Image 1 (cartoon, rainbow, N blue to C red):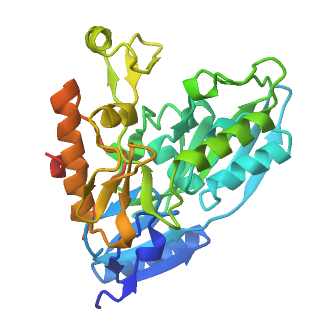
Image 2: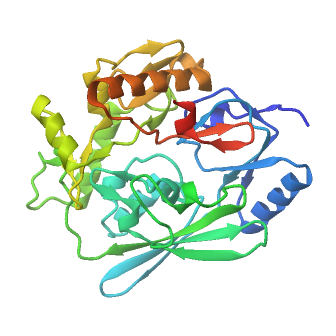
Length: 346
């Protein structure tokens, strides 16, 4: 088999790489069928939703499966709504659906690209809200024994842009097929982030928050259909109180977000911007000129290695100035599958 199928239109970075085949799957039976076919031909398997958080470094030597398992089931009791959502549902459409059914709570997570099945992997989050605040369980199909298991929220080991799905499960041996969410009926607005503090807590509605966040994201984030990117390239670093106090002494205007355990979250985009890197270009890769946290594929001509060189340059500049080593949020995909991003950025 030869690499003849382009992946350019199936990854938001618009990397012009190929795979042996790309198949949309709409059921667990199809997932198992394609996985068995790949193993019979000694080929790797890569599951994608929207390809919104991956960076392809080269051609993928295997079969790409696009998870399109659909369905939204809703139950409720006096205190909450319970949603069982297929992994192939688009995340933003789920947010819109929940609001249209008068189930507020997900509005801060509006316009996050990608599919529901990818949400637990990264523990997606925005504007002070993370998936783990709603996730009750994740249903997983194990390819090797064809069992379907359910991991509760504790078993998912959620952390900041982290989960068991990133670190301890072989993603060529399983597939997320559904996610269970619990949305409490006792709604209240979450407006702790600086960019939301202009909103009036008194009397604000979920739709107003939703519309505000959509406009904000559209203003500062590039459309992947026009400019190849994977959204936030780096995680916002979390540091201890002592380091924070030292940095704040020299950077009194530094934005931050206090954590419940006493640590402090900084904003990677601000750190990069302070290194005067907004708009910086290296080959066909660049730091986006409206939001320094985003690396872009200029004119859709960049290679994965060009993005890595730029990311490494940015990371070193931030470390030189602030003694903070940024960690990538984006997953790096090589010929046989995912590789350690930090090792490549050394």
